[in-house]
Length: 253
Image (cartoon, rainbow, N blue to C red; front, side, top):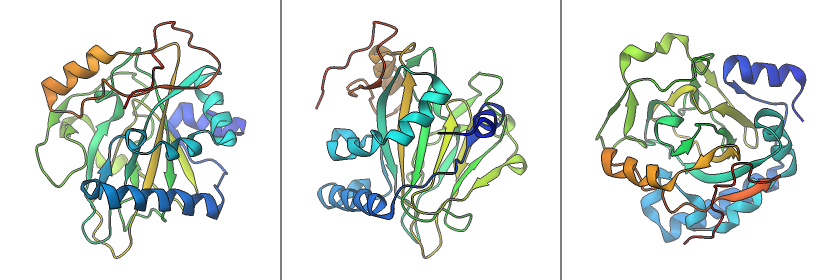
């Protein structure tokens, strides 16, 4: 469980790195699953936007009880997993993730998600660890983003430079098995990896079921901004019940 101080930090800063670490064998299992994914789908060598669409084996790690306990402390007892992705960032060429807010991409209304970021390798300033701007979530609004068509980035929506100051950023450095949790409105990004060490990270996206995963908005966002079409994502109820009564938990391929 998160301490009272850690819960307070999450709400004040928009993120927290708890005193928690997955066992080494669990980290190895995730790494092996990722290697299996890349063998079948080498195009995901930098970024896979939807792990569960290709291998439900990753779902086992989303059900880790201590992680679910922490998420429950932050967004309440009723929540669903709506996505899991993988940012691989290989050595000597891992792609940059531009500065952004997660909510710019996501078809969830009201907009709400707690992201759990799991380090599979050591994540350092040298190899492109996550950078965040503490407190940038507090206004609870989406800032201006622009489309960046570059092939050398993982995501194509980038915050307008006028919307943030990189000098305010904190580096979230993690050892394998450590995690961070961050808010849907938090401003964050990561640099390209030019080091000799890979920086693999797996994300779990949890939304409170007081919100609705709107598949029509997902399709519209895809058409308007060239985003990955998220309208066919499967939602998994992790704890409690669907408070909205409007979420669809039908399995999709």
